[in-house]
Image 1 (cartoon, protein in one colour):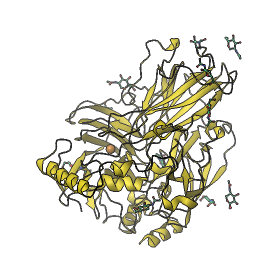
Image 2 (cartoon, rainbow, N blue to C red):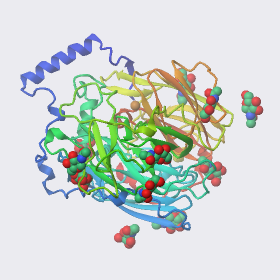
Image 3 (cartoon, protein in one colour):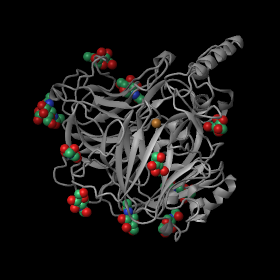
Image 4 (cartoon, helix red, strand yellow):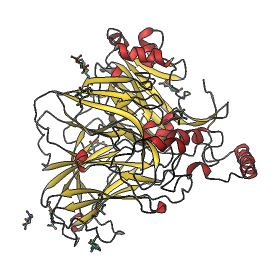
Length: 592
Ligand SMILES: *[C@@H]1O[C@H](CO)[C@@H](O)[C@H](O)[C@H]1NC(C)=O
Ligand SMILES: *[C@@H]1O[C@H](CO)[C@@H](O)[C@H](O)[C@H]1NC(C)=O
Ligand SMILES: *[C@@H]1O[C@H](CO)[C@@H](O)[C@H](O)[C@H]1NC(C)=O
Ligand SMILES: *[C@@H]1O[C@H](CO)[C@@H](O)[C@H](O)[C@H]1NC(C)=O
Ligand SMILES: *[C@@H]1O[C@H](CO)[C@@H](O)[C@H](O)[C@H]1NC(C)=O
Ligand SMILES: *[C@@H]1O[C@H](CO)[C@@H](O)[C@H](O)[C@H]1NC(C)=O
Ligand SMILES: *[C@@H]1O[C@H](CO)[C@@H](O)[C@H](O)[C@H]1NC(C)=O
Ligand SMILES: *[C@@H]1O[C@H](CO)[C@@H](O)[C@H](O)[C@H]1NC(C)=O
Ligand SMILES: *[C@@H]1O[C@H](CO)[C@@H](O)[C@H](O)[C@H]1NC(C)=O
Ligand SMILES: *[C@@H]1O[C@H](CO)[C@@H](O)[C@H](O)[C@H]1NC(C)=O
Ligand SMILES: *[C@@H]1O[C@H](CO)[C@@H](O)[C@H](O)[C@H]1NC(C)=O
Ligand SMILES: [Cu+2]
């Protein structure tokens, strides 16, 4: 178990400064220089020797991002075949080894209606274990298909396969799927997941004609396993323990622009029909940075946040924290550009970056092209990001406090509260890890928490909160209760926390610590990924009516891998009467 020692981060203790000096001297002495770790293949022709035989990444097709045609179809089972594999790709002009599904980045868009059954056969052709998580879905009665390595499964071993088979339940809206093993999704194992509602649209929801998906991310030129090693090493990636790997660029629907390497990749193009209204489903599938989305010449109207419909809110642009989603409406009637083309912008936000990344380009773009535009015309004036005359005075909005759900969904009164604190700490073995209370999570070896709980329903993680073997901080509730998670962020960074299997109400938030401030029960926002700002408190509320082990973690890939994760164990007595599929149990045995 990793026990903590001190909680200093960017106020460096003298010891660490000395250690950095020693390492600098060593590195110089060995002729390594600094920065070697993270820009060794900026030449687009270069690739690591082992990648010579890898298949090539496919170019993203516009059709993978057009959805909506299945809306209204009768309930049915929709089947997808996923092959997870290594490919060689240069999505921003820089060649690297990527981990992807079916040779595509982003992977195939999954599109279902809420009453459907989804079956995904996943074949793992990687040299490492993998698993696929269906972000934001409830998995009510099928906790074992949540896809969380170490928690609900042990991962699919190399060469093996697993069929995920579940219904959608309460969720409808915009979400995504991604690998949930270490930092693997950072390398490309992600894609959109769109769930259309079966219920009719509520009054007040504006109509649209077409639906498009915009899947955005920050982007690294190195394999995440290597970046993670450097991040968790005694001296950190840049000489300072805890400084997260800084991305080289970003992606919009699988294309980015990295000009330092030469051509700078390409731009993703959407063709729009004049006078139609489009629902753009925005996803930040990245690992570290928030992304601000806007479209030159077009004001936007926000209507959805993480599956919750929002009272229509006009805005100039919107910033998505990692793993958050929004839907915005865009009316295609702009006239300002002679070529009838406009930039879509995915501006990668640098506020969390702690060191310079040479060559970095954070100004990531795609193109919206009207059907009356010449096929080769580029948008004018690249420097202008003006949302147009219709957007005078429009602001962005805060995704935690400023959004009002379209359909009132008042929170029930809480019955049980779990206070927690989180921060980053040095351990007594010299590591620098994320802690919730005094635990830094590590996946169990050859076992999932789910199987551990099933093996000992009252003993492994008794009702209440406890720290089980291997730093598993688990809060167990064995009856239907309304839980308040009272979070104090004691860290100097903002963290997008995600609760699996639920869409909690955000009951209140503010600077400092939670000392009983009043909460908002009237119509608080519900969303599954919530940005918790530095040095602040937040109260999240959910109902334990969904049996299983549910991870609650920071979605920054580096922080989750550094242990910033705890689990809720809901209704273990109900779970004890359910059978975990034999293949999932067998894959845990294989992982031993
Ligand atoms: C998935 O693969 C199986 C076996 O190869 C095949 O029978 C099935 O048609 C495939 N399904 C889809 C949706 O491609
Ligand atoms: C999926 O689960 C349903 C319900 O348990 C079952 O009827 C069906 O056969 C399963 N499908 C596959 C492909 O395993
Ligand atoms: C597989 O895991 C090992 C150990 O973490 C790592 O060194 C290696 O880079 C990983 N391979 C890939 C393709 O991610
Ligand atoms: C779009 O709407 C404008 C204003 O109503 C109209 O003048 C124009 O003809 C329309 N264009 C198309 C292609 O429908
Ligand atoms: C585009 O349509 C919006 C209403 O959706 C209107 O407010 C705006 O003036 C129109 N812009 C142009 C250039 O016609
Ligand atoms: C998108 O359109 C621009 C302008 O016509 C073009 O330069 C670019 O190659 C297109 N992108 C792709 C991926 O085809
Ligand atoms: C229109 O597109 C062409 C071809 O890409 C480009 O040369 C021209 O500068 C564009 N016009 C404007 C006003 O940007
Ligand atoms: C919730 O609590 C408030 C005050 O604390 C009380 O007025 C209200 O009746 C309670 N609601 C329910 C459903 O118990
Ligand atoms: C976290 O620590 C606080 C303070 O020691 C304690 O009151 C709380 O119960 C702990 N939370 C959990 C989930 O164990
Ligand atoms: C509670 O949240 C709603 C948004 O859902 C907002 O309109 C209202 O002003 C908030 N009330 C308080 C007391 O903060
Ligand atoms: C989960 O299913 C149970 C039993 O069908 C139901 O009572 C409960 O409300 C469901 N919870 C969610 C979150 O869907
Ligand atoms: Cu974090």
